[in-house]
Length: 90
Picture: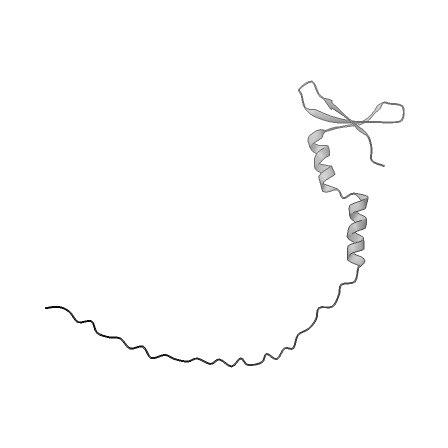
């Protein structure tokens, strides 16, 4: 179960997270910036379980195609171009 944090602001206006113990006393106070950065860096239990499950799943072997490529028959029909000279008027 995640730890419940109370959002507070310091006298300077900085956002803070306060964690309280069972008696309601402050157990830990962190800046929002530092706490949020650690939340992003850490993986949740669900994310870790999903990653482990994906890693354990056997991958299907890829189908290996024949390494010998058939030679393509390339038929090229060359067309002879005839160029007519233009007559100039004198």
